[in-house]
Image 1 (cartoon, one colour):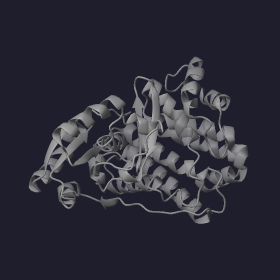
Image 2 (cartoon, one colour):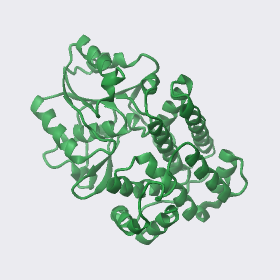
Image 3 (spheres, one colour):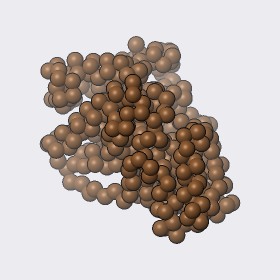
Image 4 (cartoon, one colour):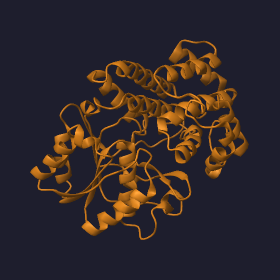
Length: 382
C-alpha cells in the first residue's frame, strides 16, 4: 500500500425529506444570493425545485437561474452561466441535478474568478485555486461529483471531452435524498450504476498491490451496486435499494477507494469520453461498452487481480469467465455492451481512437497509445 493523504471537506446530508435543509446550510456561509443551476426541468416535476426555492426564501436567500444543462455538459453552457453569475454578483453556485449539473457548477465556480477562458483549466494551462462556494442537491446517483473536486465538460467546437480537478471545487454541502430518484427513467438508473461500478474498477485494476482492506471495500461497493440496480430495474421506488445505490455511488469516487493506490487507471474513462463527445451517448452506456473490452485487452498485466475479481464478484475461477460474466450482467440490466449495440459503426474506430488519444499515453496498469486504443475499440465493436 502506497502513502496517502485522505481529506474530504464535503458535508453530506443523507436521507428522506432532506432537500429542504439546503437553504439553512447555505445561510451558514453568509451567502445571500446564489446561481441556481439545473438541467432540463425534471426538478420542477419531482418537487425538488419547490423544496429548494422554499428553503432559500425561508432563509432570505435570493437566486437567479440557469437551466438546460445537458446530460453530457458542454462548455457553451458553462460560459453562459459564468456571464450570468458575474452580472448578478452571486456569492455561490447551487447545483440541483446529477453529475452533469454539478460538474458544470464546478467549472462555473472556478471560471467566475478567472479572467481567461475556463477551458484553460481543462487543458492544463490554468490551475484552479479559487472558486465560488458550491452546494448541491443530488437527483441522480452516478458520478460521485457531489463529494469530489473533479469536473468533466465537452467543448463542442473541438469535440474534446476533458476534466480538471481542484481542492477549491469540492462542494461545501451536498444533500442526497434517495426518494427524489424514484421517478428516474430505468436507463438513467442503469447507467448511473454502471458509472459508479467503473469508478471503483479504475482503482481496483490500477496495478496497486497489498491493499487488502480496500480490495474488500471495493468488492463490497461493486456487489452492493449490482444488487441494488437489479432490484431497481423492477422496483424503482424501493427505498433501501435507492439508498444503498446512492451512498455506494458517492463512496465510489469520494477519495476513499483511491487510498493507497496509484491513483486509478482511467483508460476506460478516457476512451469513453471520446464516444460521448462524438456521439452524445450517456456516459454510463459508453463505459458499459468500453470497460469489458479494456479488461480483456489488459488482463494479462495483472492476471491475479482479474482472477480475484472473477471469484469474488461472480464466483468464477477463470478470469476470462469473470469478464464475460460482467459483460453479461451489464447486458441483462439493459446497458449496451458493444459499439454495435449503440449504433456506432465499426468504420468510425479510427476517428474515436484519435479523439481519445488527445490525452494519450494514459493508464497505469498498461500505458495505452493510439494503436492500443484502436485495439480496445475493435474488441468493443461487436
